[in-house]
Amino acid sequence: MTVRRKLASKASDRVSAVPPDERIGGGPDIRAAERGPATMRDVAALAGVSISTISHVLNGTRAVPATTRARVTQAIETTGYTPNSVARSLKRAETRTIGIAIGDITNPHFTAVVDAIEAAARAQGYTVILVGISESAEREIEGLDALLGRRVDGLILAPSADGGSTVLDRVRRHNIPVVQIDRVASASCDAVVVANADGARRLMRHVAACGHRRIGMLTGLPGLSSTRERINGYRAGLRDAGIAYDAALLACGDYSAEPARRATTALLALPNPPTAIFASNNLMTLGAMQALADHKLSVPDDIALVAFDDFAWTDLFKPHLTTVAQPCRDIGVTAVRLLLERLAEPGIKPRLVRLPVELRLRESCGCGVGAREIA
Image (cartoon, rainbow, N blue to C red; front, side, top):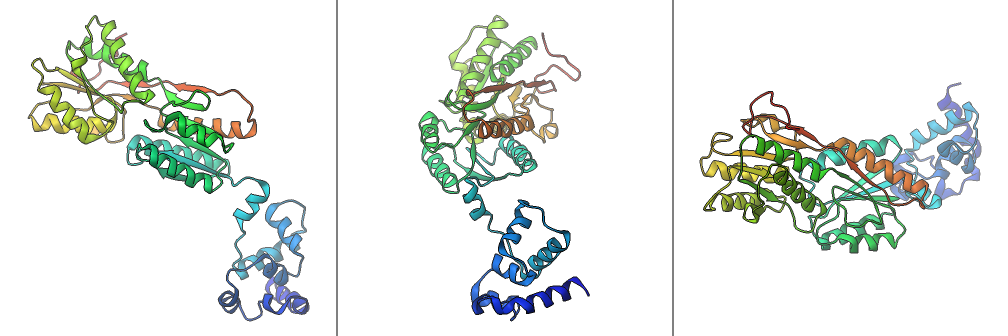
């Protein structure tokens, strides 16, 4: 006798014990139309086992004979039953979900980091929920409240410039662990960032070694730790090269393309304009390139252009861009690791992980193909 016939026989023997409104003899479509999705009781009735046996099969909480497990599996397929993972998670006080809040989800840097987070979380049995907070404290609070409402087990957050520690305090009151990425708004939470100052410093030393003494910088959003660190690295690199710092050569590009285009135009309008420009993120690089094209300036013949952030299409630009590359995958993987360690051991001290960056020398700085970083 086939498994299906056995299941049918078992179900007919037991159907009288099932309340009339729970019977599935009319077929899945009739039952679904009357009562909605299949229940665990439906599966138990069809498989001829108790509800607790269904639970043991689904959760692996007790050994179940292979023949019984086969009947349960067949019954689940026949009824179309989907386990209520939310209800099960509430009983365990966990949802196996991680919330991610990112300022600009269109930025290729964050896209790559989120992809790494999702892959690392999935490998550990977690799913992720992503919200965009648009670099706004108000949107940040709304997004985090939405994630808290979904009872996520933990959060990975790129803090906004306006929200900062105030928003993190709000989250910690819910006893939800947080890992900051890209920026640090509070020393009381774990964080994964990169060597911003070191990367900017090395890049400026190299540009100076190419002969430039007037190096402009497109700075990021005020109030962010990454902005401060990259400015500090810029100034340190100039100092290493014996170049006096000139505040007039700094222009705020807000980590966005259009503000960076306007900021680049302002730098070019200076009485003594820069001969090289450092765009301190990828989107500002696009704005700078647009402004240089508007002024019909050739890179690197008329002006050099270098950037913080390497992205997949860097090599499509002519000339190829000299950049500081961030380890996007390592940022995401490390953030997930810190969060899961925090969930397992809430009492450990907050940790700051600073990952190294890589200077990738190409042609846009004017050093030529095959050049080496200046020590």
